[in-house]
Length: 267
Image 1 (tube, rainbow, N blue to C red):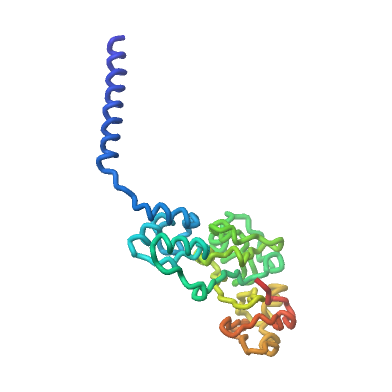
Image 2 (image 1 turned 30 degrees about the vertical axis):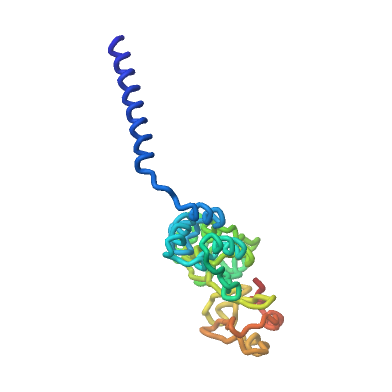
């Protein structure tokens, strides 16, 4: 019995000793955090998306204070909060006119409207789906619809549509490009539309028109009607696929009106 009491007392003593040692060490080696870092972290979105090239918002705040990065690199931060951060740092606020927003688009509208080669029963992951016999869609450019891009988006900016293909919600997108990094089909791209009506080509197929029609009901058939209808010559056909030059596009929507497969859409 005495041995048990001694053992318990010894463990308690050791625990107390280590606790006191840790308390002393925490005070001895404590490093004061720059108060500017604390303030800046409060103004950052906290999404830790990594689009700035750093591990997260805390690392970005520290890098700003140490003048190792620029405020403009945070794509998720609002203009109002950037102004507040600039005041904390004592620098000029980024010029709003130079902050041109890019938006991700998923260039495929197929989903259930694109034929399947077989029923996919594997993991709910786009990369796994493509690894299995090259994917279950007849179109080799088609979205496989497993929603990997939805799950990696830190801003809840991608939603699955009833047709079984995801779509980016333009005003929520913060250009972090995480969706691009995980898409095995490489059908997500960043665009820089201007004007009120933001249009994009909702297809990535480079197959000829006849093959597109065989595989999918909503693919680009490279008919050229959009090219002829565009008043500013902002659309061309490249590799059997319509392409918009956003430096020229004025968002008039005439291309949408003439597209026979309705593959040109508004964001």
